[in-house]
Length: 459
Ligand code: ARG
View 1: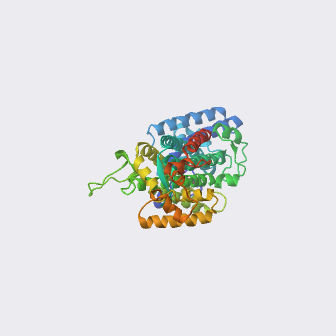
View 2 (view 1 turned 90 degrees about the vertical axis):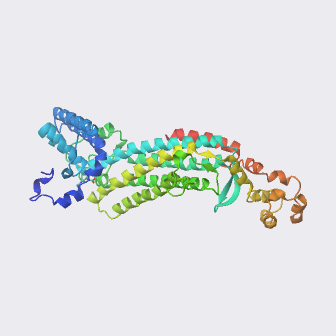
View 3 (view 1 turned 60 degrees about the horizontal axis):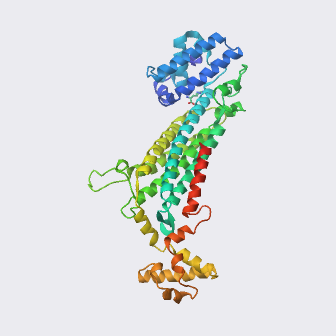
């Protein structure tokens, strides 16, 4: 007999039984479901809807169920539909008729909203911990490579010289913002919907606030329709996770590029590379590629849930049962990705000399030569034109700017003098970029300090 079987004359079709049951995936919410039911039962006892002794019996029963689920002793039933009814059914089987009182003043609609909020809150905290570990590793790498010169790129063409430290710090900025987004999501999520009932609240004089307090919420939701039909918190999580995955994906794309034979900026540790079944020489950056690839499924999770929600009339609709698999998938994907990217970065070898060589070629100091002229009062646009012509000259000659003689420079402008050679040295070009946010080693040191402080605030 279904818990809702009273008004039915026939049993559910076997196909439907399987189709609408969510226990195969929502059993992941068992802990939060029990936790929520315990808080609800305690409150029912306190406000006198049930007796304190009945509340105690229910709470004891729920503790036993939790233990048994945790030790693998419980087999869930597809026929009992979802985690909420599975647990309620177990409770009644174990403690008898009192178990049938636990659902007083409550609906699965506010129950599932509660469970998902509790679950996501814990998973946000776990995700943040993993992300903090990744940020710390990036900061360590940045600390070590403040004088590892490398070419910076735009359009994947060499642009200006920077340091590896500076490049890595760009990613710490992204991940720090991701932490902020997770914190924002958590803040807005942290209100208890329990007491919204099916959609119109309840006539029982429940104490919503005490339940919210027991469950660590900052307060209660203020509209019963919204309380059961809001999934913004899940969407915000998926949004924040999508952005974070995009950052991981960009980082991994660079690792793939840098570990290629053409770049050779880094060497991946063997533990984080794989081979080919046919080509004996191969060492592939599969892990980085997979993180890049898995980003797509998280975007899919976000778009799927946005689409599920977009046409739903208020309040609860069964469509919303589709929220959980998306959320679970995104959680698993980002957590596994963070877990594997951190040691992959920590163990990779940075090939300083190759990077430094790369920083020198490709006219990465051309802007500095134009700036040199501009600092000697040549209007910048004219300086740009002059240096452009010098670059063309060098390209034809097959050399770099620093290989020309002073007389050759003078052919293009008589403003040039001997001091230009110092100004277009790669180290000089980087060291002089001291403006906040720039790549100069001393500026980067400060950025590492500030980022470390920022991280502490976000944890
Ligand atoms: N399994 C359902 C879900 O995940 C629980 C809520 C069901 N409510 C209902 N009225 N059918 O959304």
